[in-house]
Image (cartoon, rainbow, N blue to C red):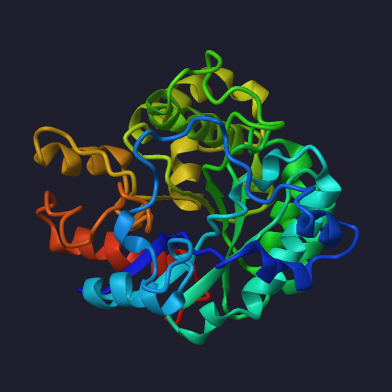
Length: 354
């Protein structure tokens, strides 16, 4: 079995590793604990987030030791390549101070490019940008986006506005120019400047917050399709990470039905939204929908209308992550499993060796 893992959450051993790359006055403030790095969202899991066995042998934070990640994840599970999505800085889109957010992204990206994570040829990086200032984000993409070990541009799903909003277009333009997909990932949804994490307001429990994350992905998807992002940027791909995929059929059915009646409002959309979705949007598998009847998983993928949409992700080191030996065992089609485990990611993250 050969696998591409599209969502591995690596991190630093200590935030002190970031300081040499951080400009003043931010370096002083972070060093003194006056500025937060990686704030949470307030809905804390009562059983934690990381696997207890993911702590490196010498201690430290889970997924902070590249060699141990390779030993625990890559080697036993046949991971050929991994897309590293940061665990410690994913909430950056919710910071009120966009200047600080942009500076932190630059420092983080420079840390990644000089870190020991690149010593393992299986690791490919997601560069992070701050959507508070899309022009600055575009400059950051153009600064380092052509590095051969950068595979994607990562945005938090907590954008504070639907993803198709035209204020984000400069960063989409830059990503298209350098040939990188843009990935959305949950990150402090409901905190800082993000607004409520559900369509009806603020939940009480982590269970609600975690279950309802797909609501944001539905809204981002409809926005990307309705605002004409892919007509403006025809080479762009967007990856929806860790937002589930069981919602895709009904959203596409509704979008296609409404487009037939309301295309006057969307003159740039000259084909059904579902066709644009299947050409430009990809999704990761974790958290996997697990129907009571195993055959319904294959039915669900069939209803999505394409076998090219899903890409395997483990979500390591989270305890609810997926194992490629088990997560797709309900699928009868070997060809479909191969596409999800390897082929679709290879076609999406084009920096990976082909």
